[in-house]
Structure formats: C-alpha cells, structure tokens
Image (cartoon, rainbow, N blue to C red; front, side, top):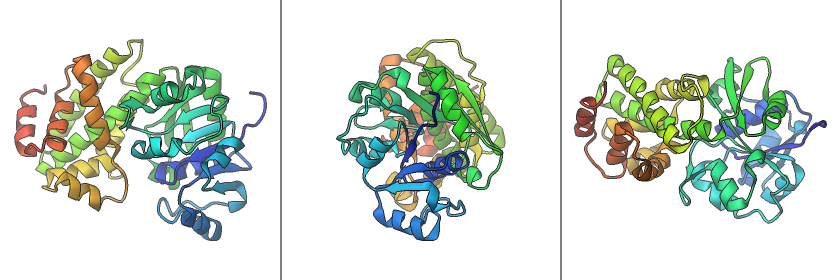
Length: 331
C-alpha cells in the first residue's frame, strides 16, 4: 500500500478506545464503530469515552463515529475488530456490505463461542476472508497503561508481512513500540490461552497461594501453552518472546487484568454468575476455557491447568480441592 489507508475500529470497550487513541496520534481521521449511540453522543460532547479509559481525551474532529456498522465497513480499507468475542458473531451478522476486499485485524483475545474458532479462523471460514488479509494485534499490553501513555509493546502478526508493517506505522508512537510476527495462528491462540492461565492465577491468589506458587504456575502455564499451540500449528517459534510469555505474564500478574480479577473472585468464594455480574467488563477467559477444553479433546495436549479451570468454572467443582490436585501435577 503506497497510500494512507482509512482505518476503522469496531468496539466500544477499553481495548478499542486504546487503539483509537494510538491511531489518532498518526492519522487525521479514525473511524470508530460503537453500537451504543448514547456513548457516541457523549464522546462528541465531552471528548472521552464515558465507560472506558475516561482519562483518554480525543479531538472529536479526528473521529468518524457511527453506530452503523455498514457505514464504517464501507468507509475503511483496514478494519480493526475489538468487540468482545462473545458478541462478535451477532455484530458481524449486521454487515450486509462486502468484506472480501478489506484487510481485517483482530484485537480480540478470545474464541467465538458459537463456532469455537479463534477470530482469524472465524473470519476465514465464516466470511471467506483469505488468511493473507487477516492479521492479529496482541500484547503484552494493557489498555489502561496506553491511556496513561506508559511505554507499551504490541505484536502485529499477519501472513502478509507488508500489511503488518503498514499498520504498525499508524500505531507506533512515543510510548508504543511494535514487533512484527508471521505466526498469526500461534499468537492468536496464545492471546486466548493466556486469559485462561490468568484466571488460574486469580483463583490461586483468591485461595491464598503466594508468590512462590504463582511462579511455578506461570512456568507451567507457558510450557502448557507451548504444547497446546504446537499441536494446532507446528512451526518454528520462540515461546519466550513477548507475544507469548510477555503477554502471559502481564495478564497473569497485573492489577488491570480482568481475567485475573474474575479468577480471584472465584477463589474467594464467588459463584461464576455472581462474579460475572459484579464485573463491568467481559473476562474473555470464561468463554475461552470451554472452547480450549473441547478442542483439546482432539488435540490431547497435556493441559492440567486448562482442565483445572474448566472443572471449576463449568463443572462447578470446588476450587480448593481442584487446586490441591493441580499442585501435585505441576513441577
């Protein structure tokens, strides 16, 4: 691409807000789809998102805001989706204009519950988007720290490296560094799996396990992630790179981690339903663990942590007893 592309971000949450903020540093206009018209009206009047990252201020002259998803799809050449995976299928069903000439990047760290697919695979299989036009934006990066303009690193993965490099030009800035990867499937599965391991870290904390055990849990998590991803897509990758290990660590340890927070509540005795009701944001790992567990019935990767979280979240088994069993399986 030898022109400045039009880019639109789809989603109204914290991650979408952070991506819009990054793009506004480098583009005159950024498209932004939000299904909530009241939120759009608020942003146009008050110059910040009323519900997420309210400290991030916008020059509304830079924003092309719309609650019409087809309007933004038609507007942009590059579409960045940051809609929670639980709602993605419903939102995509609203699209009536062609997607086949678009470049699509997913910033969604989860699995589409209805199809059991990671987002890139969902776009490919359900919407016939070629893999060379699909990319992934992953961490290690929390939206909250982007809003505070703290130094953060992103990984952009795409089969077509040129497209990843092109997008990176419009995201990089004084406090954002970008790395490029060709492991689109591995990075997306890693982004999904790390949410499950963050729930495990949260449950452990809620149960009273300390830093010593957390270190062992994270060490075992990255090895479990490696086994799992290798079963799905075997290629040369360094699992210790930031897109894998780094993203796991920040999600497993950070106070900003929704999945760790969700797990912590479960460990402290909340029911799954009550924990979800109390949280104002989606914990992607809740949906991911069901799909990951189901997929692993065929993969047969050694995955005691995924099994443990699944048993607690979906089978209603006692967290304390499940973690006692897990401690005997870790090394």
